[in-house]
Image (tube, rainbow, N blue to C red; front, top):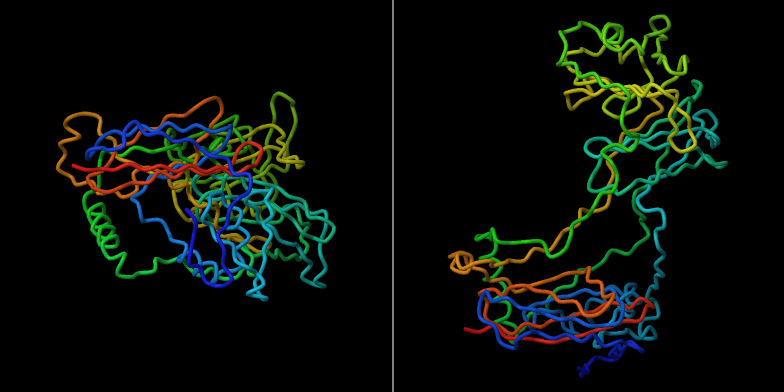
Length: 441
């Protein structure tokens, strides 16, 4: 549909070379809570499918207001597939910002620099270690570059997480860890996209308001996910499985941690004088002492062994030992001793200088669209109202060899619904398809 009556400086946007997507519904008119089958056919492509109440999409006037307030996003909007998108004439706004988006090839990362506190000079060729605390922990090593900088890549790090960063083996040098900000402060603040309200939209807004209230009060138990959620291919901890695991509740109480090592884990011994003690692992197979193992407390690296050995054993859950040399990246650990507590404060252990705790924002958890499924007569007769105005949404439709068929159910809301399918073909060409159907009594 051509866009008309646009203000000066605006024009309809049409993507050249756009590919048409064929969409066929098995019927034109449906009853309430009736199954709908859609057949979608296109060249090999990745598509987004939306089925929504007609009129709930943002109008060209809404987009005009949004892009006027956020001219720096115009480049992004102008490349979206589909006719009717607006392209702003930059000659109207000489000061309009232009941002060229670059892919983040490393994923979620944490970066910073290590400096000498005395002369503020960067420190190169020194190893830093980081630990992701809590569920799905991670452990990573990084060596500083010539300018003292380092970077840690995290794997599928999701949600708000607590992170620990420290320097390993600093030979008692007085060093500082300076971390970069999580996000750039250079981006312009985005102004929100809002519906413009006028009398012609009164009935639409009233219907949306009633639908929202009903769906909040009457939560359906018949919903299912339209597509798979985020999968995590990594194990619970990225350093693998230990050679020895000792669960302390399986043994009688032992008063001190050094005695626990001596009585229960003979391959781990406490060496050195008080004030300068360390742990030692003996590898029986190689008949070799590992004198500088990595020591973890709830998956966080620990350097002060004297302080660690003062922990009350009643606060410990288990001890795990990797009794051979272990590579993490290009760093070689002489074994690993991992102590797990049953507390949320590391059993009272406190870290000293040359380490940092921080809150870090990972990737936001994937929100999976759910839609109601009526499998039998009892479901159809359910007294819970279903006034969804978005019947289906799936951003992960792949067309590979022939048509794809999707199914979903209508709601109790009587209206005309539009089906919008848009995406890109395997060779990068935009594609778009539209159709509609009616839900009536």
